[in-house]
Image (tube, rainbow, N blue to C red; front, top):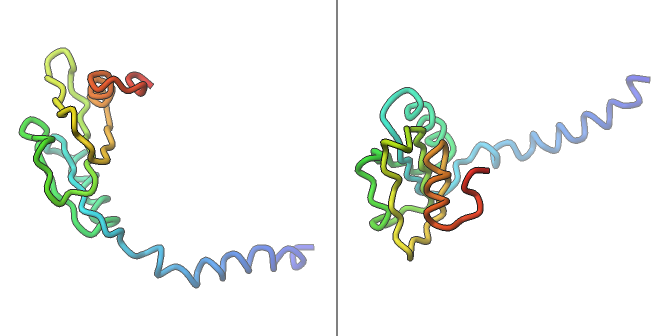
Length: 119
């Protein structure tokens, strides 16, 4: 019985292994990670560098969303206290693909009028 199912397992594995080099290649994007220095930032940056050809780092408090020449995607990671920490102010014409992680993302979304506020 087990031999009968062997082709159903081997064929997909062999097909995927033929394309393994394609999956190992880094994506041709320049990513900006915006966060707070520490272990969490180090882990994210290490992961991003393994996936993308260029990764830059900006500190959350010093980040200026309006000036991003050459950046393809922004990742904002901040889990601070929204009662104390001022959310980032994105200009009305901000059009850069951006991923938010942590509590601050809901505040940024709410300020921009997005429906993702507290999802």
